[in-house]
Image (cartoon, protein in one colour):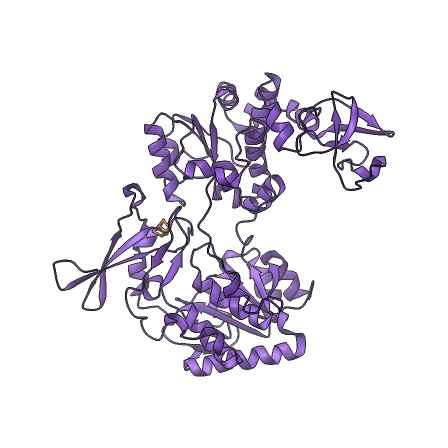
Amino acid sequence: MSNNNKEIKLVRTACPAHCGIDCCGILAHVKDGKIIKLEPAEFPFEKDKRICLRGLSTLDITYHPNRIKYPMKRIGKRGEGKFERISWDEAFSLIAENFKEIAKKYGWKSIGWVLGGPGAGTTKFGAYLRLASLTQSTRVSAWGYGDAGLPCGSRVIFGSHLPYIYLFGKFWQRKWPDLLVVWGTNPGESAPLQSMRKILDSKEEGTRVVVIDPRFTVTASKADRYLPVRSGTDSALALGLMHIIFQNDLHDKEFLREHTNGSYLVRLDNGKFLRGEDIGERKAKAYIIWNEKSAQAKKVRRSNKDAALTGTYTIEGIKCKPAFQLLKEEAENYPPEKTSKITGISEELIRELANKIAIEESVIFLTYMGFTRTYHGDISLRGLATVASVTGNVSTSFSSGYLPAVLNWDPFLNTDPETPSFHRLGILNLYNAVIKGNPYKIKSVFFAFINFLNQCVDSGKIIREFFPKLDFIVQTELFMTPTAKYADLILPVCSFLEFSDFLPHPYPYVQLQQKVIDPLYESKSDVDIATGIAQKLGYGDYFEGGEEG
Ligand code: SF4
């Protein structure tokens, strides 16, 4: 694209940076081959036009004089920061030689690809995963390196590590609720920025907005009600809200029976769900409910409309209660006075919110990274999700909520469907794999899009116990980060203005992150880095064309 001023070329690209899901469109102004300005780009829907300081600062990052400019091999001790310049060919050979050597001793799965995030992008992740798949080495998932609370809590409640579809998918589709409870997120100042635009739009259309946050944030300043919760007491607040909802008999019984495990019987002797095998049912693993109509224990069916939600039942000598009964008893311990003392929120505000959540026809709970980056944040997320569930404010089908545009990666990653793909390891298991060889040995790591030492737990342990156990460490980076200092090999990687990719965000778009300028210095895109390694390992045919291919 170019405008009337022939000297300035305009290139529409998009930001895949940290927040991952916003992917703001960016219009780059290029003069004499140099980017001179970035600004928000147009979207078909004008309210999706936005940008943040981080996205804008990519201009400074790209042209920063301290960028790593060429591949470097360590010549001092690890962490000392002494490196010497080498060529890309030498760098790729070094990786291939080390990987082959390590694989010979410990097997290919001892090589871990530690790919960070969040951050969108398909080919940059895909290229390394394809290589991991071809070599049957290990993909180390970044979920949990700073984001454990949200996925862990969500998995317990929804069976999926992403709660978004269930909690606020409709909101992202611009379907405004009567009441919006913003809890554990501050989109006015932090990702996802797109939520703030939607909060303001929904407010204009009559949505009542409540913000629960320890700090009076920018988001809170736009709310109809602000509840200043004391840090770390969110789950007490959730139980306090449920106390009032249950006491006033305002919970959604039909939803609880049909869409939750509230009616499943729990054994009082061991706290586990009662299963078919416990009472001589043919279906050994079936969950059991108490059918109020027939006054009998029955296995769970697709519809459980007559299931008891409360009471105590003895079946084959085993005393049981429905899960909802146990939740109710727990919530009884959190009357408004006590909840107020714990959370610092007035009784009046707690009562008002509980009643509104229960009475309003449509309520949406908006959350994001606030819980995930706090100690025991999984419990807070579970509290929020349980309040949403007992009041029937959860989407029960994928089609009713936000679905990210998903590109089918399978043919890309699984080059040969007949052979197995890469091994998988969670990042928190990586520590044991490296330090203790459990569940298996990891002897080399390839870090991309992650500053592991800064972002992962226990940096002392990483320096003292983790790095020394690794035979070979590679880091792709733009700058000399603390982790890069411990690498044996540093590879200069492009900023997002220097390569192209597909970004499956924001909903409902797929955007082209278009290369604006050629890579500066000797930096390469991740696809070209993966291609160079693949060629040395004998898999070049699978990466034909590299970045341009
Ligand atoms: S909000 Fe996210 S996608 Fe948008 S410019 Fe900032 S970092 Fe980039």
